[in-house]
Length: 218
Image 1: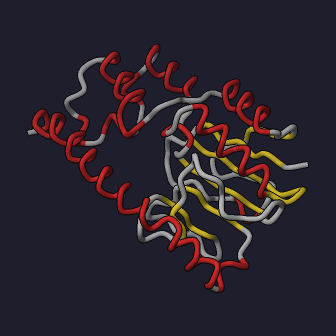
Image 2: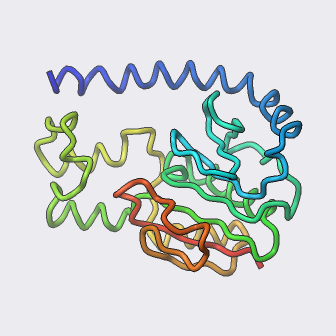
Image 3: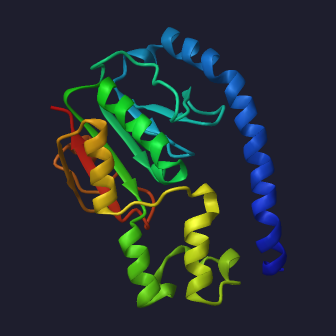
């Protein structure tokens, strides 16, 4: 049964994603108009790729009709220059090509106010390579029932690179490069759920969010 799901799930997921993408493409501008007419237009904290994880008094954005805003990372963010105080994303940037990630980070830099913070959480490529070399079964997702078919570390690492729409995985060096290219000169790496800013503490929901950076616009 697991082997059947192994072959069927990616195809079914792709069909659903295509339908959802087309729907959201048509809803993109109507959702921007709806947001600007709502009380949430005054909120200054934006979560990108919210999924089902909604933050109170944040603008929760995703490519899904249930979100507050529908946003695509390659498009201009619908906010004025220097207008946001926080931007947060968990497991988002690794799903787009590097150039698209840079475009989003530049938009984040544009829309954040001086002193405002961008927090990014994602899987860590270095952690993945370490697990591949030492103990590939230590990863949380490998032990999920739907991945019980995985038999070797080579199969594991191929899934990690190719499944779930992954396009570009980062380590500290690569994320530092991307943040620098986008205009951020002040950034640092933090532990899971930790931050010197109270409203950025405890936000991560994924165990495999091993690479977490905070960038401050100066």
